[in-house]
Length: 352
Image 1 (cartoon, rainbow, N blue to C red):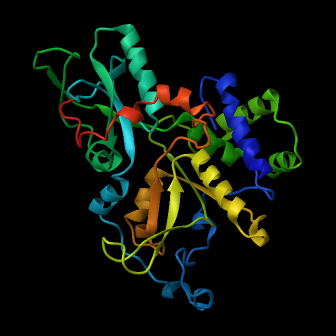
Image 2: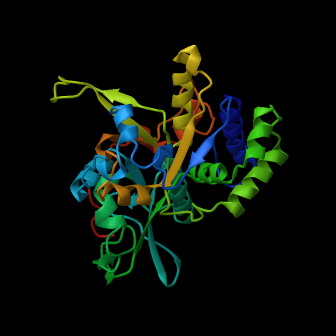
Image 3: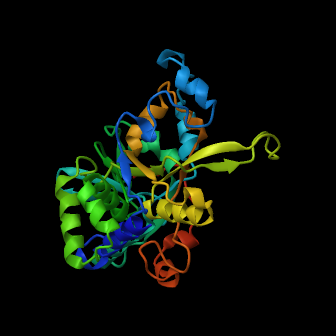
């Protein structure tokens, strides 16, 4: 597990080395897949079970096809994922104007980043009655984030009793956690030589971390924007089980493939699993897979050899064992975390 720990250590050094805050090595290294051989398994291979011999012998045209997921199914698949935004006390969103020509509304995957934006706005005008509100990603994915931004909305100053003025062209941006964005870039820019150094136990110094970060920031082929490109991580060997059948849980268990927004959450889950795994699989190399949420949802809405209805998206959660997600003590992390006191709120933003 040396390499995974080293990768996490590199990301955590971001706290002191860059404005971003951030989060490996298994004993045999990491492989990262972002190509058409989805999830590290060649096209046509069944992700969710099936007879191995039949799978190998079947012609590509004979593979089972799963129907495309409908928009409603995708919305339900995303519904349990919270995103965060700065709103007024009535839940109306706060539109920011980075310049005279642009109006932007930000959703954040991280409540900490939303809270930082809130504090910045309150620092400019402490009398503004603003807060961080939580929304369901499923409720806003099609209706707001991927809708026609030419629709008309009403803009008015926070706290104003006036009717406001209509405007068009508001941009809606979904911002990933900077640690996971950087983690995605680092995974895409690590080469075999980097992995060998980590496996050899080379000490992770600030200089090495800075070099890795610079490489990730300048050479990554994907995830080069700070919004609307949300990394999703998974390990091809990982599975979850839930009770199948009816609502009472009767019937055969259902095998699910977990996907994570948080690289650190995924790594921690894998490490916990490996500590309990039989000795003969302790040195299994995890195939880490990475793709953007937009690409994933586009694939789900097409006929596929992958049963996406048996994929579960895991929302980011604080790290266990007394540490917050950035490595801070849980008490310190929780003090700034609006999640603890917030339910997942409105299905719409109203007039922004």
